Image (cartoon, rainbow, N blue to C red):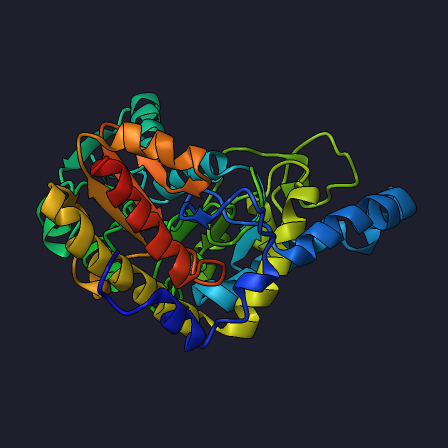
Length: 403
């Protein structure tokens, strides 16, 4: 057992202590430490999803589009922008998968810099981002400039400065590195990119909902992210997209669907883009997939993103204290930044035994995340994760390693 401060005491003085009870908690799951992959459902969502079928879908049927659903990708986008992104209304939309939104925004950015031939991206970026950029570069004849960050870190301003040139059209970076949890310098890197005459697209998948972000104030051009991690929208819930106001009318997105046309219900013979951010919507949005996100946004609005970030830091700091005491002496390596200012809401640890350890933990109802070849990620979602879960999880890893 650890000699660090007791988790029960930490939970008792937690300013957000009332929030974990607002999430569905299965008795089979003793500790859930994978909120950076899939967030728990809220209890409000469990009730809303059931009532939606009978009252909204079943009761209103097709009338629901006129009454609320048609505007939902934009009204929900505005709400998300205000609560978590630092984005004024009219710049954020909900819809499609993260991959599709990233594709649309990357292509749109490149149309805005047609005389530039290079895209900057890093080898540590999430596979989807890298695969998309490779495919688009092949399609359009662009050159990739690769940044190779350390495995326990991420992309720094110095990395970007060295990769930029007069040929750079677009820089694509994750705000929080999916493996290490490294929190990139969004305002600094954005400013550097603009100084070179290029645009920047930030992937917010591992930061939206847990890291204070000011997209407008920091001059961000484009951003995309999923909503099923810290925004708790549920498996496959639709992605978010952000386009800075000054770019909306000048960029052309490549997937011209009927919901983004100027007159979607006219069913006209040709496509003309809608004014405003709606032009970045393509097909019919997922209404069911947007329901749970609304309930989570209610909790985020209630708690406040600053308090959520403070709890995130406290949870990851506590996890590191436990790891240092219990696991590092057994040969475990910490592969996340030690400085909280450079860390998102997950901690990555490495050991060659972790594939087997993780499998055993799952059997016990203790659920961290495993990444090949030998990483365990402790994904700590501030509103739903308790300090007791963190303690139980790290102690269980220790118990498996000394068996």
